[in-house]
Length: 165
View: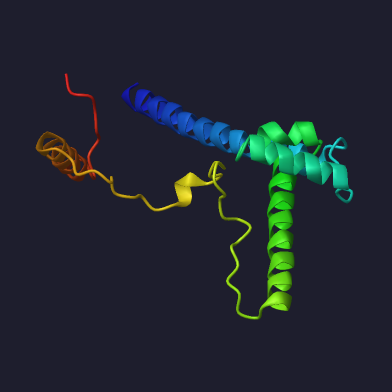
């Protein structure tokens, strides 16, 4: 009887492992196919050339809602990936055209990139920019708090971090 209980426990644990692997891979595969359907295979997705009105609508919405491509996409009638790709393409075209004009006028004229922000515009990708130090020096209390936080963060590497009671 003892061997059979041991064998049953092994069988249960191996079944749990197999079912875990199956459910996790099944979820990943189903998410992959779902994304593939909504981003490419869905017959409702436009795969034709962009019209001028679609471009204008895209540029207007990108200015109103920067980086919100999932919100912009249904309004334009395209996928979020298509909208982002087209937006990048339009910015590249503007930059190339402006560069050609500048070269015709003056060969060495320095040109501002079309992707640079103008006054009043919101940065569409702030997370890609490096952090800037505060313009005002911090108080001693703030500096001490910051150093304590750094020490705590440095001490948690390789450990499970929990909430202290």
